[in-house]
Length: 326
Length: 243
Image 1 (cartoon, rainbow over the protein chains, first blue to last red):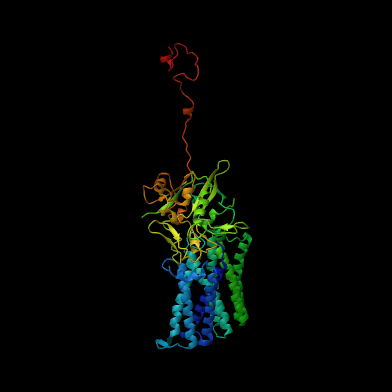
Image 2: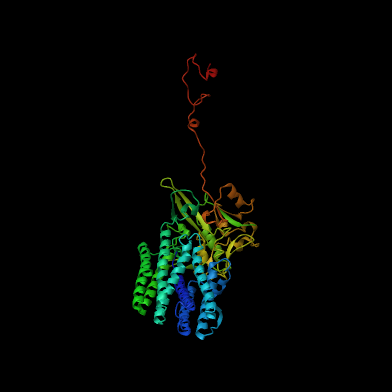
């Protein structure tokens, strides 16, 4: 498939935004149970949620460049019963809204204790809103992943690993940013977020490698035999029926030379996993905000390459019909 | 329930592209807007087409066969492009099974074209909406046309009658009979899309001739050559006639 930068930016930016919110909420949840120090609502949670919203809105903005008619985008909420794309279109703004409400409740301090759990743990309003927002965040990962995983003839995508990878890579990226943010605010959560960021990056490395191994030995169900319905071991296309380009020759081919395609795989494998792990480890040891921020930025660059490769690697069966100009 | 479709006979298609040009001519002149051609007279021309004829070579030289293969929307009975559409612009008609795009609802997200295994949907570069074969829905129901012209433009244009049009669910239609009696098959059955359009396979006409049918074991009427006169007392099959 042809990797569209609008979709690459959409999926990586909202992934980081979702991950950042999940990190902030996890921190708040732990502090309720008195495992972590309580953070200042306005200084920490409100600013953090503002950053998450900025990422989500930037992703949403980027997605409009993918559309032929962005002014009709509101229509895409109609078919949520059947279309994962429609579901994502609904969940993304809802999640962004929930994060905004969560941040606003923190900023304005409208945070009454709703009930007390065993008399020791106070469950306040923001905790309930945050739980709903977390659920929406995970649903958004599911929707984004399923958009690709549900197309069965794109066999490189049609696996549960697609959803798992979107979830883990987005979360890793968000926790990486949360680590830098926590270090900048001197919140005492740096090690907590950093630990999770390392763990998620390592697990994401395993699942992403699993999908790379799976795709390396994939056997495509469609062949020229099934494409034109002639049972013969040797069929060659002599002409695709036209000499100029068409939508079919642009949309489904990545167009990069083979060595660039292979190189980008190694670029993302290095930039998403070992380099950020190294940077975040040194950054946690020395408490350097710059290094922790660099870890996030390097990983984000790597994720752009990862997403490019994700699209480019998918081989659409329609390409069987467009092999030779003739 | 009726399901209109095309049945394409690969045995007689000669690859003349008349269906391609006729399709473009009819559909670019319709009320739904023209099928854009970008840079038609300069570098990298590109345009929207509903129908293409491709050419494949089957076999190794010298035992090869050239197969001309027309390809347009197959109007699947279980179309994967319809449920993925976020706006409902892509839909399948209940009354005749034609898969259509509502150009006023389409947002041009291209997701349906990813979901179609056959690559028969094209984003129009000018209108920025997804376009595809309509089975000439604006033609087949047009009562101002004579009844024998209420067929898709490609069917009207085909000089070898390689394209049959009809309701494949009606067992008595020409299309359904052709599928049933001449081995009609569907493309890429592995994706469960159940295409309504069918293809009729190439056929070779041959008879089996055994050696003893070419060389006569016997020559009862003695037609071809003068046989040497046998001895009078030799037994022969011809003895009843040779005296």
